[in-house]
Amino acid sequence: MILVMDVGNTNIVLGVYEGKELLHNWRLSTNRSATADEYGLMISNLFKHVQLDVSEISGVILSSVVPPLNHLMEEMCERYLGKNPFIVGPGLKTGLNIRYENPKEVGADRIVNAVAAIEQYGAPLIIVDFGTATTYDYIDEHGQYIGGAIAPGIGISTEALYQKAAKLPRIELSKPKSTVGRNTVASMQSGIIYGYVGQVDGIVSRICAETKLKPRVIATGGFAELIASESKTIEIVDPLLTLTGLRILYERNISS
Ligand SMILES: Nc1ncnc2c1ncn2[C@@H]1O[C@H](COP(=O)(O)OP(=O)(O)O)[C@@H](O)[C@H]1O
Ligand SMILES: CC(C)(COP(=O)(O)O)[C@@H](O)C(=O)NCCC(=O)O
Ligand SMILES: [K+]
Image (cartoon, rainbow, N blue to C red):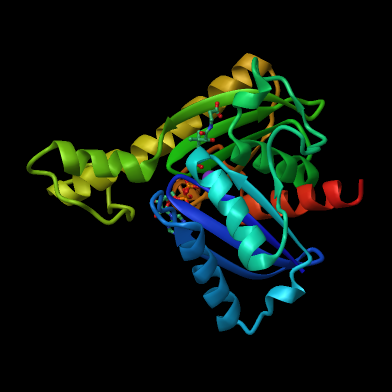
């Protein structure tokens, strides 16, 4: 069994795989002030809850877009799991040709998503990940990572309305009955949800026009299902894309 971990700006997602099968997955909130011991305890407790013994974990792979947590998570793996984790970044073999101007600049989560999406769906591709930020990645017809777009995420955009406008409440993100909202909450839901649906379809159409190709469009992340249900361009929702990518990268590196 292996443990895969994706450290995002909002959540840390963990998965335990036996071969290709995902046996368990958990979500912790990302807390920049938690210590290696605190994360170690949380993971030990999750393992206990499903009667999983640490000794059954033969390896760990970790991707992070929160640099202050990189060293800490590595230390946690060594201390609580007795394993030196693979870390997605310079030095780890990805098999992905990254054509960003500075390949080191691409977020590790975007690379991991690209690896999983190419393997499962083939290139060319556009990947939309609704995380803290909404990221768009374009993979060309040769399976090369070219680049994409980064926009404010749905959660932080909604939060910004509440923080910056005195009369706007904190709302639950669910689909309103109509685009024309007739109260504050419905108006905000319309603006956020249909605004994002428009953003996705707009950016995807522009990438298609720019590349003169028709890439498949895969969505993942917290709000993928909600947006995909209204989007004209999202073809597949794969909530496990990042975990799958980590598993594939682990296999590529352990067997080399
Ligand atoms: N399974 C889920 N169901 C509903 N909302 C989710 C889910 N996962 C994440 N979210 C929400 O989506 C937003 C981004 O979370 P996440 O995708 O984990 O981002 P990151 O990868 O940046 O940490 C957060 O506001 C989170 O609460
Ligand atoms: C764009 C991101 C903030 C998205 O992170 P997330 O929303 O998953 O927490 C992350 O991939 C990142 O920090 N990227 C580095 C910049 C880049 O990819 O160009
Ligand atoms: K993410």
